[in-house]
Amino acid sequence: MGDSFFYGTGISIGLYISYVLLFVAAITALIFPLWDSIKNPQEIIKSGISAVALVILFVISYVFSGSEITAKYMLGGVTSEFSSKMIGAGLIMFYFTLFLSMAVMIYSEISKALK
Image (tube, one colour):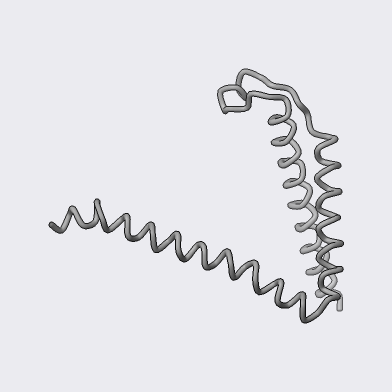
């Protein structure tokens, strides 16, 4: 009886609890920012500017990404030029934001040290 609980129904119950908790977390992650935005409408403008900046960054990344498909890509499941271009755009955007955040952190630490 002990082993069947952990390998059978126990895991199923745990998964259902995880799904419920994930759903609650997702709903709260959507509701609380909306609630704060209703209280302070200026935050909507800042969020909109950030969203537009991310879209512009993605468009630039998409333009610079390649669309070639090699045998190695096909083994990985990339079967179209569009998929290859989207993956490339995502990687370029990730690298850009990574280096930008590192530069901002370095600048922040240096400016704090000099004050």
